[in-house]
Image (cartoon, rainbow, N blue to C red; front, top):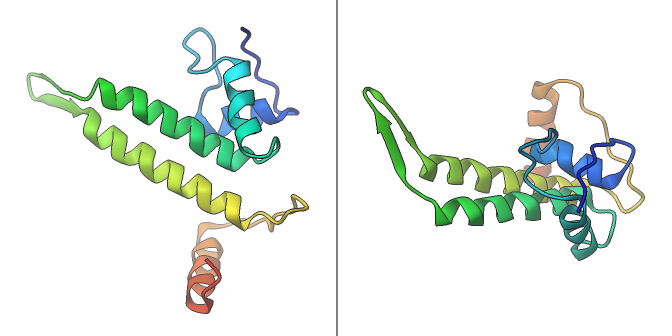
Length: 125
């Protein structure tokens, strides 16, 4: 299997969304990311990225533990919660992108938050 990172491809876009952008140390091979895309209609990069994040989460759940060295500690449980939240955000984005692939560009976080609030109040999401 191969690793490529080309943002002109859907595989590259999924890699960008999940932070799998460097080798060595890549999380997925191209064929695995293509499988996530295929499972989501072939071009739904946000849903494919959400599935990839959930696959990472499943792998990390098998290794769940707390590591402590001196005053420093790290829990993979909190990492799991963050990955679950990321997957939910990606799924929400997949639902908000129209079928033609056009998505409204929002340039600042305040207008994005306002847009989401209005959508929720109107029952859009």
